[in-house]
Image: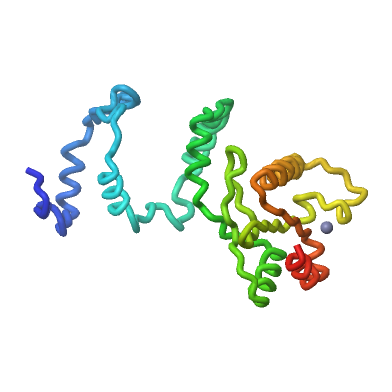
Length: 233
Ligand SMILES: [Zn+2]
């Protein structure tokens, strides 16, 4: 019987070459019990169908798998040409399981809630410049403070007590009028950014925050002038 702490009889033992050959030989010609029975344990047929691992079990599995390196990690030429071709063909025409589906509002909210406490660790270069100039001059501020904007969560670049919010806007992503003069705005991502900016502006104002948007080129041109702007704000 399996008992905790018992050492399996075959641990540390290696089969001799002869013994292996014997084992192989004794099974020759046998048909594996599950041959041709693909999907035998899939879906409702799986004994685990509809059940869930407990948190504890998940933790155990996670620990047990830690440090496991996939057998083909870092290796090349592990698959034969035919296998690779098979894998390729198998993928063709198959679409993502999520294609055409939409998350429910409930699911969306769940995703938002899960993300709300994840602080971005990425700081853009102009952001870093302004952050350091603020620190050097003894201005106390919070980086990437999370604000609730309607149903979404937004991290503002800089928050200064009691109610000042500073956003550092990249000239491309926020389509700075002077830098993007004469260029046509086609990028949907940028269009969405601008839409989001407007919502943020409105919402923060409603929540009695003062918002100052500083453009990337302003910081690059004269960061001290930006500091002055913030101090006077
Ligand atoms: Zn600009």
